[in-house]
Image (tube, rainbow, N blue to C red; front, side, top):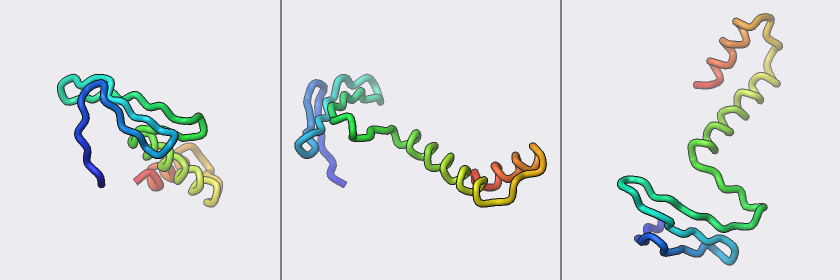
Length: 82
């Protein structure tokens, strides 16, 4: 992992198309501005993880037997969510 120090209003260039700018530093939070082409997907890590979790649940539900009741559906979702 490359570690860089930046101050507010300083930028970082990733490749030709992506620019990260430190907009503000407030306590333990950093506000980032991101300029990137529309086809570049930008997600917070926790959002990416939630999407992956939901995809895993969808695959498990699609490949498994059809639940007979809401209780069995809840159980299946709980098992695949861990």
